[in-house]
Length: 355
Image 1 (cartoon, helix red, strand yellow):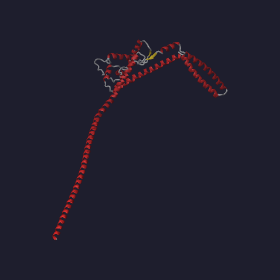
Image 2: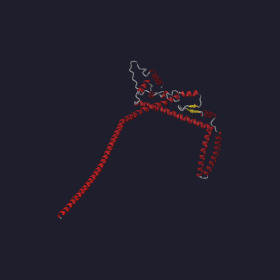
Image 3: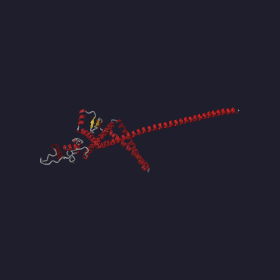
Image 4: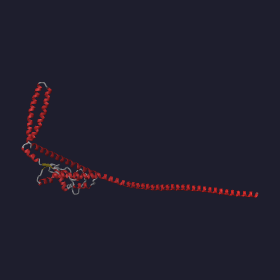
């Protein structure tokens, strides 16, 4: 392992081709080669984060190569292998973050428990009461055992069994109280430790125990420490790479949507055009209908007027006919009278001649 680490160090300092003779052909670097550390190419290698801390992962088995990293970063984001490396990085870092999150939860539980114990311990009155209860229970258990034995001797098996059951229940109760009082009897040094721990808190980033209200210098040292900084870097890197992956995966979908929109646009325009021409036709038809209606109305009006005129003319005609008839009648009458008069006159004259 030490040899491997030394070789890697030399590779990083002098380049991977340090042993190649000047006239030898140098193999071109390909970032997809499995010898290169994919985490190092994506962002950083988690193995480098926690060296010589409790979270130390040991040395990385793969090569950290700057040239490969540069080539990787120049490759298209949509390259399937690049996306695979992104996913691997997210998975590995997330598992480390989940581990520290579990550690934080455990630390908080431990502090909460110590706090409760300190409260129990700080209550001697309660301890005295527990002791009294235990003594009473012991007496009662002894009595019941004797009674059960007697019942068994007398042949009352059921009664004996009932008494023993009751006895067991009381013993359980007694054991719980005993445990309680034992916790209560913490020795002096433990009590001091509890008192101290009561004023501690868990770091929300790296899970370390911190003393509440500690000197600023100590707090700064912790915040700048390898472990705290390491977990900070892990969390921000995971967020960053997840955002890149999301963008790459949603990109084609967004473009598809955009293309669909673009394709829809002319169709929409055509629809609008069609609608406009439709409404234009409708308006034209409406105009024509109106004109037709107007013509029809005018025609009706003309027809009515003509009819009325004809009727009026007919009436005039009739009137004229009547007038003519009357005129004829008058003329006829006057002619008759004239003739009559003439005849009469003539008659009288002849009579006169005869005489």
